[in-house]
Amino acid sequence: MMRRLAVLVLAVAMVAACGGGVVGVAGASCNAGQLTVCAGAIAGGARPTAACCSSLRAQQGCFCQFAKDPRYGRYVNSPNARKAVSSCGIALPTCH
Image (tube, rainbow, N blue to C red; front, side, top):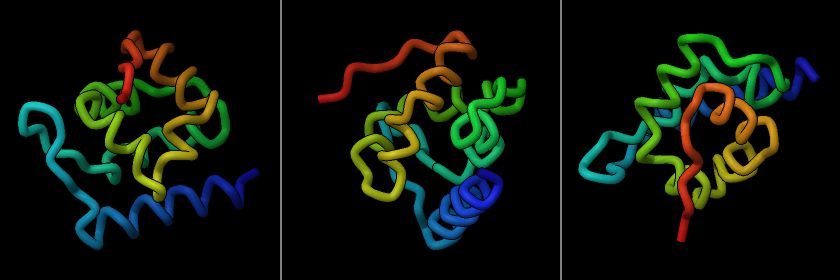
């Protein structure tokens, strides 16, 4: 489990470092690297921290783009990610 978490954090950090940012809804800057603080919640099912919830709110307009991206989709669409978003009081978008 810890190895999987470490791989997730490393993968997100590497993509973010290599220009993983994109522009989301209403010109919001999408940066999956900002979600590394949520690795415990998304990969391990831990309760999201205040920092995680803050990052999720900042990236909320980007959820659909992350979900469609093969680098992030399996994490963003996971039951743990949905649980973390819900625990932070954030509505899950309907992606088309």
